[in-house]
Image (cartoon, rainbow, N blue to C red; front, top):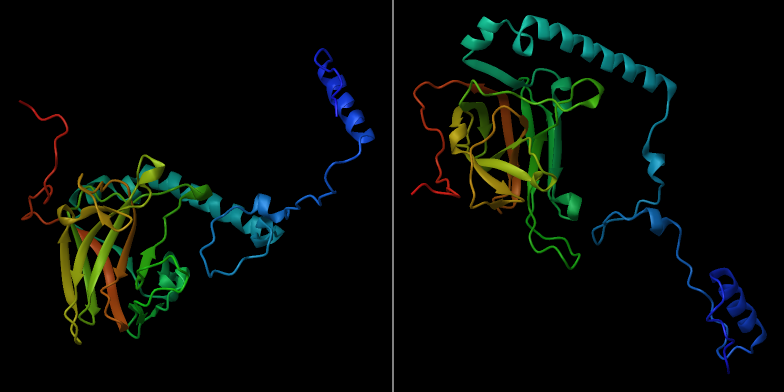
Length: 307
């Protein structure tokens, strides 16, 4: 079979000549049905873990479009904006300057009504196919009651090797029009908790604002050892004791916690002791301990040490 001479033809005539030539030639191979790709696979490219059911919905089907919802959102954001302007004239964080400078204790979270629990989120390894269960409710004496069952059995998906964790974490604080708002704890140096646990060791995690996207999983961690029993315990942990971790791994390059842009705080259980657990929290606060003068408890490497 000889091909026509097409070396000097323009691009449009080149394609047309090839098409006409092959239309009049007898096909050498039998007709093959072209492969059809579902349309959903082009737009739905998010990673889905093995064993997780596929959500057969378009992205906009999860959005609740409503006129009244939009009007309520506009009213809410303009109310927050008005409060921001008024607080700016009063002083830092809506307090007079003298009160802000002399403040030694501050309660950040307290749980006195069900609305206080709406600023927290609960998760466990059930999201990746595990068997742990975690719940959050208001306690009998107006406290935060975090309870559930821990199971270290890994999911049967062929990929996950380790499992068994439950965590509760505060939500990102937002200003008007869903702008990020941070906690400023620069005038304090100690985290103050009043908790009552069941004797299990917990991990306290504090998330701060980062500059780069690959640092979004950076967390500052420290241990919380509960005694168990019916008595409350007041725990004070200096911020200098918190160490940096990324995706659960302690980093070699350590640096202190940035207290001027704190986003979230959380409590994580993963001690591999299967069974029920409970943690009751009365309040979470920060305080100024003048007896604590340590800046950072861990060794900091100098990239360019002085000779």
